[in-house]
Amino acid sequence: MSSNDAQGMAPLAELRGASKRYGATMALEGLDFRVGRGEIVALLGPNGAGKTTALGLLNGRLSADSGRVSLLGGDPRDWRVRQRLGVMLQEARLPDQLRVGEYLQLFASHYPEPRPIDEVLALTGLEALVSRRHDALSGGEQRRLQFALAIIGRPALLLVDEPTVGLDIEARQRFWQLIRRLRGEGLAMVLTTHYLDEADALADRIVVIGSGRVLAEGTPAGIKARAAGKRLRFRSALPLAEIAALSGLDAVKMEQGVVEARSHAPEAALRQLLMRDPQLAELEVLPLKLDDAFLVLTADAARHKEAA
Image (cartoon, rainbow, N blue to C red; front, side):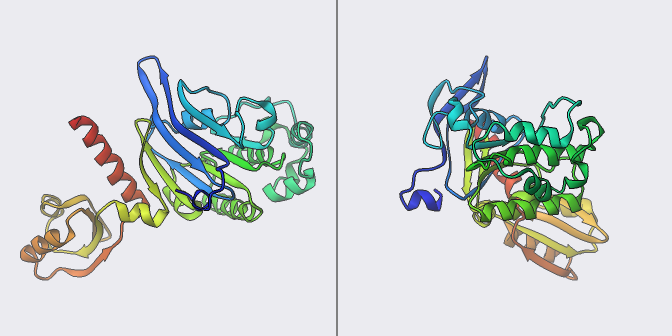
């Protein structure tokens, strides 16, 4: 539950018991999901988990087979409601003939109080590209243009699908800074990303879904704590294959002589290691990274589904 819900404020967007089927495939199955005012929510899950379908319901592109979908207090299929929504999809098909400035002018004309074009150009670092055609932009520049088009209408809520795909590290960092600035202005956001460090850095709350259902929900720290286990780092004279065969250790790897592993039973694993290698050195017991927690939660969900 978000802090906004706890304070009795209606969420900006909500899926309540939402289900969606494509033929024999159940994309969403009774999904509950909400976004509070000024909140950044990261929606995570493996491919096929239902993330894109959930965004499609929120932006009005799709209709739920059952359940309730609410956007900014109204129906997302109503164009007047969608005027307060910004959307940046992973795949956008923009005609190549128009120039950056022409796109911004065109999109600004659809909103009653758009951001000034010069302001949007400065925010997204597109000032030098204002006269360049879309087909002359690099992949990263096209992503920046797509984001500029998503924010030009001063949305109350932004839906962003894999925003930094194709960007280098420096460009991703600049994008993160921009997101934090917009959030400081009160903008709420739903973010899907395969870069789990991105969710860890930006999100107030993370919702992990799989097979169309919520697997876990909470702050990044809470998600990591919920996936029981630790990371172990150490140096050992034991062969890596022998270490990997020990019970309680997962995802064992070695880099520059340092072994790193996940463990759902770190105390038992350490006892086995010390019995076999009393000279174990440089031992660190660390909390799980968000990447590790995500893998643990989705693997547990898959096992439960198979058992059912």
